[in-house]
Length: 158
Image 1 (cartoon, rainbow, N blue to C red):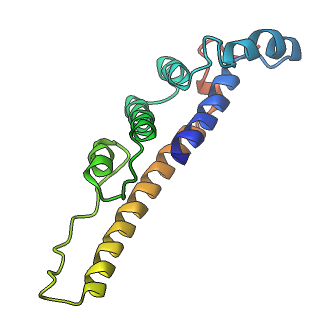
Image 2 (tube, one colour; image 1 turned 90 degrees about the horizontal axis):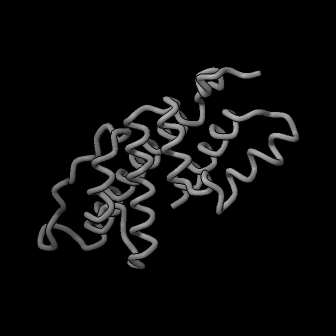
Image 3 (cartoon, rainbow, N blue to C red; image 1 turned 180 degrees about the horizontal axis):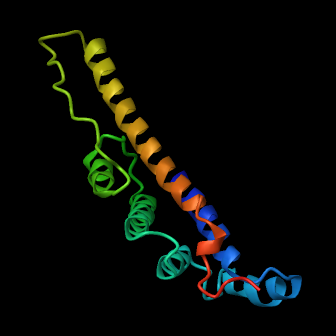
């Protein structure tokens, strides 16, 4: 799920901005904290840190956690899902950043229309749902990415 990769990038930038910028501090103090086995090596820990510091809101935190959990579930499931499947729509409906998912249309029945028209109708609905998801997640990631440095560290910068 590309959204989680973009979220990880945004969180990495925020976390690094909190720390000292001199070369020595970055090399010997900051980098070891952020590497894979360091205390901030996991994305979930970095997310908790920026939330605990008051950098992101509770809704942003909850949305990020839900996206990470959804990615984890989909990675272990192995099933190919459509955007309109309940396994995808359910969690997306819980995201605070999603104002409203498009309503499910009343699809034509096979005795009412040609199969290609019904397929086109279903494809259009899937595109509407996908667009809503992409725009909602983009807006969330944009908000997180635009956090100001001045708000990041309660200690201020030396």
